[in-house]
Image 1 (cartoon, rainbow, N blue to C red):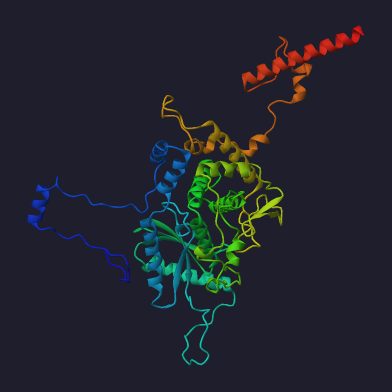
Image 2 (cartoon, helix red, strand yellow; image 1 turned 60 degrees about the vertical axis):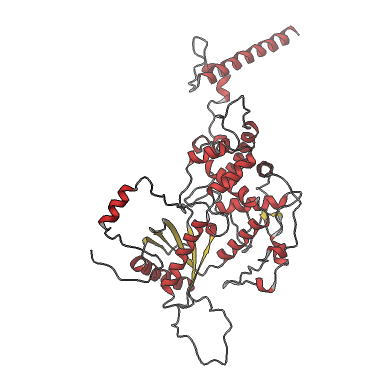
Amino acid sequence: EKPGVRARSIFLWFRAGPRPKLAVKEAKAKDEKKAKLNSVEGSRIVGDGELKELLMSAESIEDQIRILHGATCLNDLGKRLRFLAVRQVESSLQGMFPQALAYPFGSSVNGYGKMGCDLDLILDLDSEAGAKQNPDSRLVFHTKATNPNERTQVQRQLESIGDVLQLFLPGVNSVRRILKARVPIIKYHHEHLDLEIDLTMNNMTGVYMSELLYLFGQIDDRVQPLTFCVRKWAQAVGLTNYAPGYWITNFSLTMLVMYFLQQLKEPILPPINKLVQNAAPTDLRITDSQISCSFLRDITRLDFRSTNRSSLEELLLQFFEFYSHFDFNQRAISLNVGSSILKPDHSPMYIVNPLETTLNVSKNVNLEETELFRIQVRNALWLLDTHEKPTATEGIATEWGLISLFGNKVKDRITPQMFFTKRLVNVKDIFDDESMAPNGELALDYKNKMVRHQVASIQKATRQEINKLAAGTTTT
């Protein structure tokens, strides 16, 4: 096979060479004494069976939430592998664009990523474009005039970068260009890292949002485990989905958890406006779209201390209780002010984007999915209340705690459609003489025998009462 064009790469790759005969003989003689290589997995996702065993061995729901977080969160090696992918993209382009930088954002860096999550990247080909230039300097960078239509320019740049990734970068394959989307994007797979990567350009609000979520996770050590638990529950009951659609996203769920922690009598998280008020001059961030993303980055200077000492188990129950009564019909959620506000429009669920406050984070969620969320939080309360940890005499095989929540399969879930289906039988037919067969039984066709017997009993009792009333009227 003819080799391709040699490219600079940060991945070391050694070719296997022949081994000396003496070394082979010694290796065979010492097979049993050979030390095993100690390795750490950076991408393996914990299976449902293994996770269930870990949760069953816990002492309490508090322990289950901690175990779930520790077993599923992105580990240190997983984070390092993702930054390796970031560095590969940067180094491949900096020969022509010396100021090019790639910024990871999303779940890989915000503290809420799980093993196997995708890597989201924002590429800035000229990271110092907004820097103040010396007007007295006669040295200037050579540039070419850009397309006046910024969107078209981004699409053409991404198309060219996609070609470079596909043709020259080692390990990159399955490059897909989605350039007609609202935010143009390139998706590709990195076979060396077993990683799916999404690359876009000029959208720094995603990076600043990741910073904000990371800061919330650092303010209190209960924030991340609780968020992981809620997101895992939502996935188990079918509230979230990997494909885009009308359902709640993980980002919306994270916003719901953050808002709940702001609403407690003793808040665990402060309003975002508190972070904005405590911001220093070095925290100033303004995007190219003139969106202010300035907020405190150093939490040691934050003027907020929580006195809440609730356990994770108590917080999980309170989360479900809180949203089982929340008025999504009239109220919108604002993490900026830390309270609900009147909905600006008629979206079934409205969560104000913390940075772009004119946008709705959950705009994609339709009425059916909003109602399903209400149903599932009430169902979760019931499951946790009725599936407590079994005692020693009851055995350990009984599902309890989080296992009862996660075991509620999607196919068995309660859905809003169940409350809007056609009636199995018309009420008028129950008391219609034509519905009776010659033998005195109901002539209606019922799919369930129990329903048929119940209707027959109701009909018989009702006729007896009508006859008694008729007899009493005649006597009078």
